[in-house]
Length: 232
Image (cartoon, rainbow, N blue to C red; front, side, top):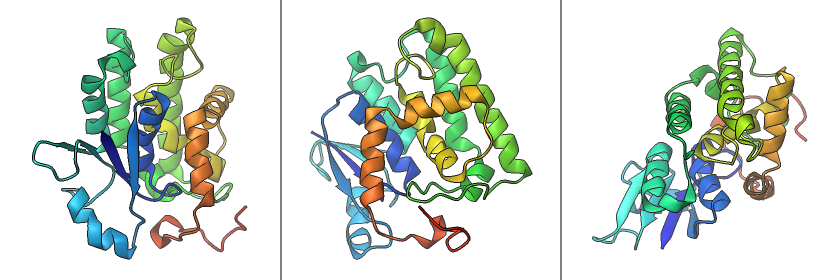
């Protein structure tokens, strides 16, 4: 049995990424949530995670000698792609798959200005905040990536409105960016807005958002604009 260890759904963008692909592809798993800055986190994170970070995927008994432990979102994607070859975690066609993996790797390693100035906070609405020149460059690059993926691989496939047609790990990787755009409302191109709508309304993203909106915990480092505008 697979177990995915995650943090708060309102804030944990990295937890969201593997959770979405597991849920979207109907791969059975159980969820263990450790809330940030909680006594439970302090007591249990070292047991679950060798890096003491989330997400972490366990295949088999947690801590068992014969079990497999995978940490880091992109590594989890690759493990799932190997473990469930029939599920199409990545696009099937080689060129599309290479592009998708490169996009995911760029997201994993980059876009720090956006991630810093616009932390994921699904409950909040801070339109116009977090924007600066470096964030604008990040957004322009993301829009260009999304546009190229959809024009080259998504729309011609006719299999769905996502980056490569059907929902894949690439869409899961960028879903937290869609959540950020929902919270901070930067000006976006019409095709970007269309893609964001498709992601926001995907059943797995809706399920994650529903849980996030039910949370009440406050994580200060992810709330740099609290008190600036009224949250909705």
